[in-house]
Length: 450
Ligand SMILES: Nc1nc2c(ncn2[C@@H]2O[C@H](COP(=O)(O)OP(=O)(O)OP(=O)(O)O)[C@@H](O)[C@H]2O)c(=O)[nH]1
Ligand SMILES: [Mg+2]
Image 1 (cartoon, rainbow, N blue to C red):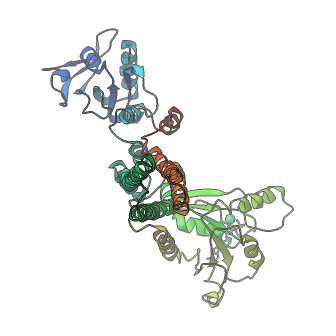
Image 2 (image 1 turned 90 degrees about the vertical axis):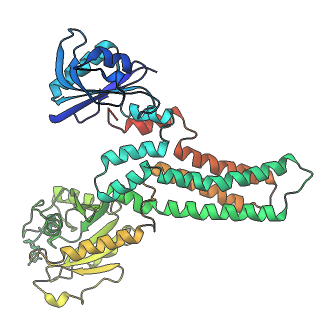
Image 3 (image 1 turned 60 degrees about the vertical axis):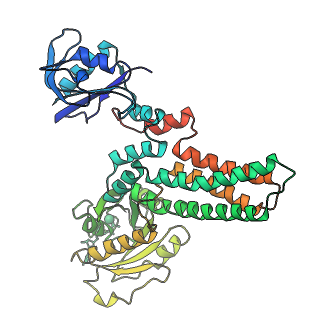
């Protein structure tokens, strides 16, 4: 494998820049391009050594800094690694990289360091994906899940459920190999119980995806309803800033707006759209269509209505069967306090009474959102599936186990096939079996230098 190099820190002016090199020639590169003041990094593995980063062609110093040598296999990639730390100037970074590449180091592809770590058995595929999730986490909860996954929590679970399946498979294969001896009824019962037990665990992990994907991507709330109900005012209230134009004119909002807010460690994506009404205005008509299209996008639709009018029942009816969940948000209660508790919607899971102008109701709405998220949360909230890839493989494993249970009386060969299918799916999750295509898909989403 070639020796690769890249900037590991963000490409912007900063206190420090770290350039990383991994591969067989890392030692040689460090010797050639870094001159220690008193000693050399390669002679002092895993110690930061002060000195100068040199330009390969001229031999002149580019900058003062630190060099460190981390010999494989006890390094991030499992290969020899050299790191250069110097002043975080994009121009200096360019010079250092140019010097490395002139020396013969190959520019690293996105995620290539982590990919090598995976190929060298330093981490499994779930952990590698978690590294990227950790870097890109935007909420406390997603950070927690990524960091547990990186430490091997999800992988440990996959290993753990695989063990009884492997044992069962071994029993069955042994019986297949000795056709004269029937498998004992006790053994078959044990196998059945083991499969049942593992299937339940896998199913609850599949269920955690509802929570997991919301945590990773953010929970999507659509502010929907008739014109002038105060949707844009409510959006601004939730965001805590004047993001959308508010006006007494009906039909103010045309294109949709999408903004993320973090509340108690969760990300919420609010979308404000055009008010729903029949109109001859072409631009507004387009806005209304976009609004309707977003109903499926939303995890939750807020039907925002004006407490002084009753013009919304039909619009609400039309949501039926399309929205995943609907809350009624009665706005402008300052104008009609009588609406509180009396204006209701039966098909909505919750009813709220707010005044965007008086800024009341914000906390209650956020508390409500947090409650439904926590309701989705599995008991152990750090053992959560956040990737569609993992969910799909778990579903395959679960359905294989289901058909194994249904066919428990059938010839043992059948049972063996289904158990192998389940095990293969589990192995794919952690990368015990993988294809080059899968690796490309996963690692191309990484940043360069990780
Ligand atoms: N009294 C009162 N007026 C409000 C309240 N919320 C919004 N308004 C007023 O209602 C009018 C419409 O508000 P918007 O937020 O633009 O309503 P919208 O639903 O986004 O309207 P469209 O984008 O046109 O569909 C504005 O004049 C707001 O100031 C409220 O809680 N109380
Ligand atoms: Mg609006």
